[in-house]
Image (cartoon, helix red, strand yellow):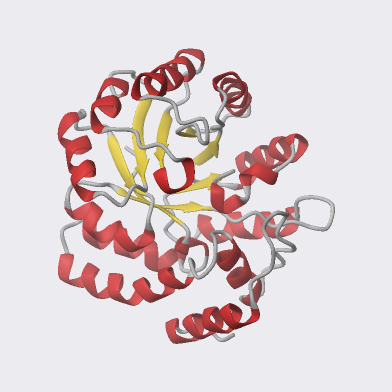
Length: 289
């Protein structure tokens, strides 16, 4: 069962490609920081702007250097394209696939069911549904998740709706081995308290040991200790969303000495006043920046 702190990895770029040296440094960081798995090609990794040849090379490097499971983002708003990406990721030996609900075209619940069903029938790699209505414009309902949980290789959901009532229903309506993961760093503790198993985390990019420890404490029922760490991480996590994710976290990694390179358009550098707020949050957490 996948649980704990799963980092949604920020992708380091050069002016004309992926910075492989820094990418490997980040892989090694998470190999030794208590991180349970690494997600590549998530929103935090600027997935819409990663080229086909870069995807293949990153998957090769991930399998070569990571000692923990690799999750590959493979979702689009086209079922045909999603299946193509899912098959490709499977051919590279990815351990899990993260498949987002189709965005912009706003399918019905039946359309969502058929989309995930079609993907699940074409690959054997375990699939994690990704629900983030704030970005996609569509919310997958607990009843639909319950139907999809009947497929052997649909094993969990990353829930970023912010709706704890909905998450409670998902947990109650799905098998005990179906995993619900927080998609919001600031809700990790309450989500674990209702039966979630961890987080796919932005903050783990810069505080991997602390996010892993928070999950460990909460999952073992040590809630008072977990609450104190949650409070400490809260303000750092909040700073990761001063501007659109992944702008702040990539900027933070650069401030911490990683050669992250540029953001790819249409993302752009942070406004100077927000850079100062981010720097203050990093210092308050204990970083020397």
